[in-house]
Image (tube, rainbow, N blue to C red; front, side):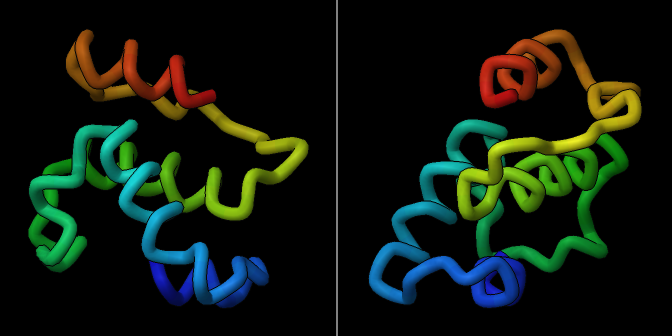
Amino acid sequence: MRMFSKIKGVHPEEMEAEIEQLLKKVQLDDVKDAQAGTFSGGMKRRLSVAISAIGNPKIIFFDEPTTGMDPVSRHNVWQLM
């Protein structure tokens, strides 16, 4: 997420707080130091939603972002969007 934050031009002083906030919203804050390759399919989808929200873009295009997520995760992701 740090790499995407840099690409999207997030100010370095705000980067860690924004990453922490987004991971918390998609319920991945407890695995923030784990490698994405170890994540389940639903976790990877939640991570991709969090990555897309970095930098607070005006528009995000999604194609069935909550497919394969449990109901609680689906609700949290829709709240973020």
